Image (cartoon, rainbow over all chains, first blue to last red; front, top):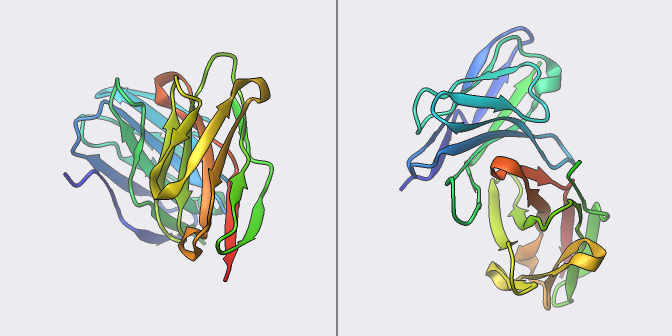
Length: 113
Length: 112
């Protein structure tokens, strides 16, 4: 199993550009999450999904969109990049039942200038 | 609202010394609690977790944590720190749909 994979690892965007951060998991987990981590801060939840076709906002959803067309994939879309979105983005997944442990991807470091 | 507080932003210990990282949670019911470690430029690795039962939980790399309901705490401990333990440590609690609420983290430095 590859676990949770994220692409790209690094990206620099100009203000106003758009991009999609990719996230995939091969563990057949129903629940998936996007977090952002700002310097000196813990992770904050952007969006989450409890299954294909079902998504909901987390603590800091403004400026982002998500979709979940398959169990495996959970892309995060930035439509109009702003400097405030400079951050490290982590995708995670967890099975519906059981240990509740979240499995994290390696992260995407995004800089908006 | 559910919250997690890590009072210490930065801690420095000498190699071989004992370590305790503090974590306090705010949650009405018995929470699911976790400790994660993050090395520079890396993702998060789960050290240990508490769901129920024995309040002293053992994790990887020689870490343990004790759940104390009366103090709303879940402190992480290690009897003897190694230089490779230098990293950032995050305490987290789990709410509905397994969403994680993280503390701000404690950065651990280890002096030789």
